[in-house]
Length: 157
Image 1: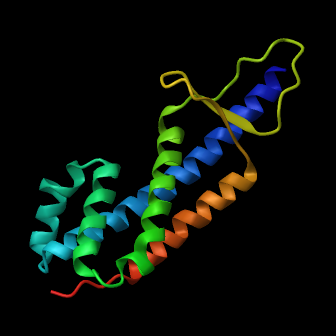
Image 2 (image 1 turned 120 degrees about the vertical axis):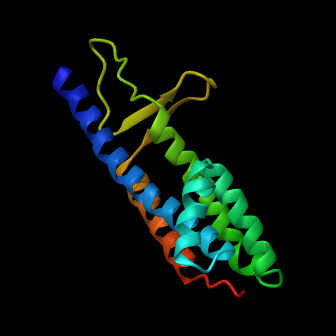
Image 3 (image 1 turned 135 degrees about the vertical axis):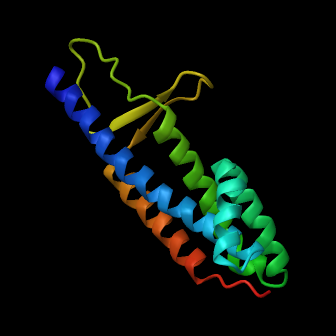
């Protein structure tokens, strides 16, 4: 049983590491877009990142970028970027689970250990969330697609 639980924990460490790494790249892309919307100078870009943007939560960065893009692309936002921000909200929730929820390892001695791990939230009482290989692959695809969309955004000044 101990080896099976160790396997679950190791799997969660691998999935968490990859997803959090991908989320860092996504968050950085959001920061880059925000900074370039406000400034056009490399020196000011560095200042706005250090002084302002890097002090915001991931949630705040998403909200601010949404507001920026609604202002920059008022006619096409709903059709072109609405799904992007829905995906960012889903990714944010997954990222938060991976960053804060422990792996469920509370099995009785005679219990069958599942192949996939679960994350458990004690605080809000929403229980266990199983995270499968399919969930892992879908989350990675979502993150990569969001990075691609944000990389194609060009702000007019």
